[in-house]
Amino acid sequence: MYKRVNSHYKHSTMRQFKKIELLPLTDFANLDIHVVDEKHFDLTKLGISQEATKELLSKIYSIASKSPGVIIASKVGDRNFVNTQVKTSRDKKKLFTFPEPNPICIYYKSANEHLEKSYSIKNKLYAEEQHFNIDYHYESFIEYFQETSEGIILLSTTIEGFINQLLEDNLELTIDGSLKTKSEIEWCDINTKLRQVIPQLTGIDFQQTNGKDYDNICLIIELRNDLIHLKRSIKANVTNYQLLFKQLTELDHIACSDSIFTFINTIIPNYLIERE
Image (tube, rainbow, N blue to C red; front, side):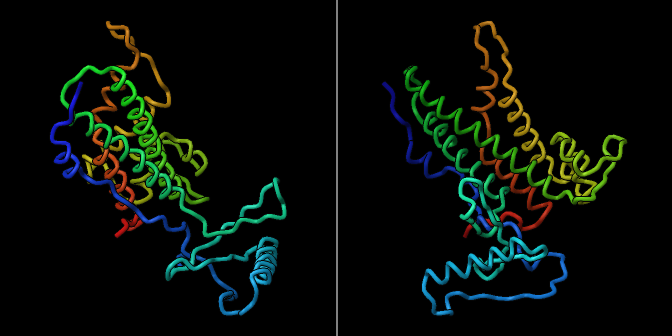
């Protein structure tokens, strides 16, 4: 038997994960391009049927897809964002078009959702009196491992994807004494990108300015590597992954997530926007 101790108190004082806006990727106003001609369509004011609206949109998108240099944007709030178009081999007549999402925001939001679940599981287990219900602990830790590992991998994906977004097509940087192109830099490990690529691109040495956050990011990367490249470590008690399980249990979920948020918004202010 087991029981919770001060579970209401524990829940009420839990720290919170950041909730962010999932804004589309490319604001049309921020594009560094020369616009020759611009046309605005407000289909809500045309007074035509849904079928006629669909036919008109199909023509517009068809023309745009066959015309180099034509960009379609849609209004989201008070801003216009560039649309992406997706057509697949399953049905070549069907076209999906929408403001292009930002994968970095999706990764970070998804990471926090998984980590929030695992954080809640950990707090629940620590709030209970010591007991030895192995079935309960087994099922709880499976769920904890699943949610934590997915959160860690997505946090790592967030930061690496963000850094790769910063790389311009014709970029060349000196890495470890050798001149490397964008495609070569993309294949560098994340630690090299943090220590060498970011300072050269931005003039910001995050390790020097935000030491604790940098350490948290390195921990996330290390745990991600341990999870992806799972290695056995046989102990005297014949367990294989006891150290990894201990590291996952001791993880400071919110601090690590917040460090990713701080890094991204230090490099590009307001890149990740918290929901009000």
